[in-house]
Amino acid sequence: MRTHQPDQGVFRSISSEDIVWQQFPAFPPAARLAVVVGDPTQPGPYMVRVRLPGGQKLMPHRHEEDRIYTVISGVFYIGLGETFDEEKLQAHAPGSVVVLPGGTPHFHWAKSGEYVTQVTALGPITLEYLDPANDPRNM
Image (cartoon, rainbow, N blue to C red):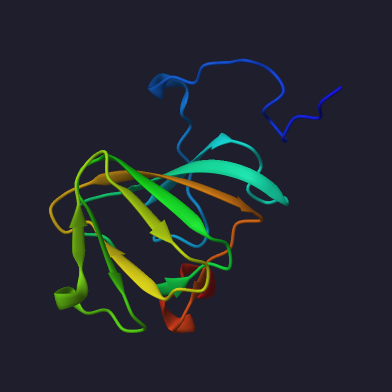
């Protein structure tokens, strides 16, 4: 018999109303994360959603894991590099898919209002700020 991936052994449908938004220690206080499928703290596949209110920034950081972002709503502004540079931001409209290789320094800005992205990756989830002073876990 085939073994299923964690949290994927039973057919189910997850509606927007079922999404539970929570604070995530590595995010600024106004940002939210929702676990959609899997357990991001464990090895294996996971899917989370990230909601960043308008005006909020995630300063330069990196993730160990490769990530695939799907823009659910709003405009997702992401830039590559070790320092925040508005000139490097690229805007991605709803429906866009962004592939981010693990280890790539990048930053986000909800420049034109709130956005929601869906992140698919293999856990465990990681987030390392390049400047520890930008890490909310250190405040």
